[in-house]
Amino acid sequence: MSEPVKVLVTGAAGQIAYSLLYSIAKGDVFGEKQPISLVLLDIEPMMAVLDGVVMELQDCALPLLADVIPTADEAVAFKDIDVALLVGAQPRRQGMERKDLLKANVKIFKSQGAALDAHAKKTVKVVVVGNPANTNALVIAQFAPSIPKENFSCLTRLDQNRAQAQVATKLGISNENVQRTIIWGNHSSTQFPDLAHAVVHVNGKLMPAQEAIKDDNWVKDEFIKTVQTRGGAVIQARKLSSAMSAAKAICDHVRDWWFGTGERWVSMGIISKGDYGIKEGLMYSFPVQIGTDRVVQVVPGLTISNFAREKMDATQAELIEEKDCAFSFLEA
Image (cartoon, rainbow, N blue to C red; front, side, top):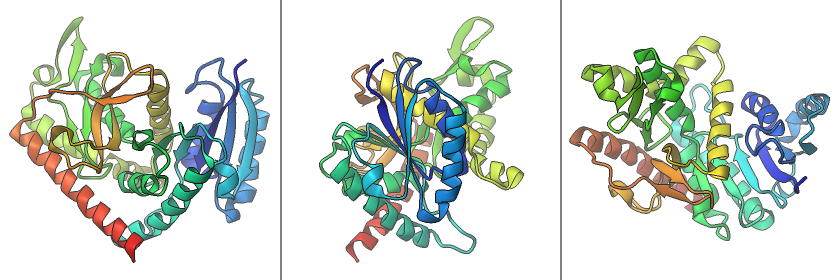
């Protein structure tokens, strides 16, 4: 057996982590022969709950789970980790303005960035899930300067999965028969779910998704709104935010980063290098392909319509505003 991969999950006593940890520990992400060392970080008041999570992981008797380290100490949590899944963040409470949410999370991710910089392996892969995910990812990257910027990402795979599922449902086909749905921009209600390049397998034939759907109004209106607001719809129905689907998307994101995507396209938030006219330095969701070397490359050469350009620019504008607001707190 190889050396364990050391995986940190923050917000580890929360509901997303509760759905996520079992999948990681049983081999769904890093493979059926790869031992795992799980590090579980949460705040001090959650330690009793976290002890219960540790007990359950032990009681699963999973052959790949080498050890579990619960802690409230960031120095312990980030020590020599290979992968950081940053699920924990300050949630938006009733009456809280967005700037207050940004301010609270800047404090959290500034501290975690310093711990990441000081204690993690320089090859660590970082996935930020806690919202506002794109801007939180920018903040932690800012405070971990010794770690390459290419090693930071944020989760938009949940949005991609939602988009894929909407198309599959619309056409009455399985999810695996929908490919190349794209999420551009922010993991927020301004994101742009794009079907212009998507393809589907219908009755044994590969064709453009929009040609199969034959409903331009649905593609440009209902489909986009449904994906943009799906998280809120889940909260309204469950009275809790997405957990099972979020955990599945985290697993998808990390597995593809670890093993590569082959010819598939996936969406993930990465730091822009200027592709498709997106401002350099923003954490923006792009369609990407990942090699077996774990290097992420933006899919090149896509034609961008005027409709798409407007949507891509709108979500970029929100990200610029978020970034400026967050970084103003850092300078204060």
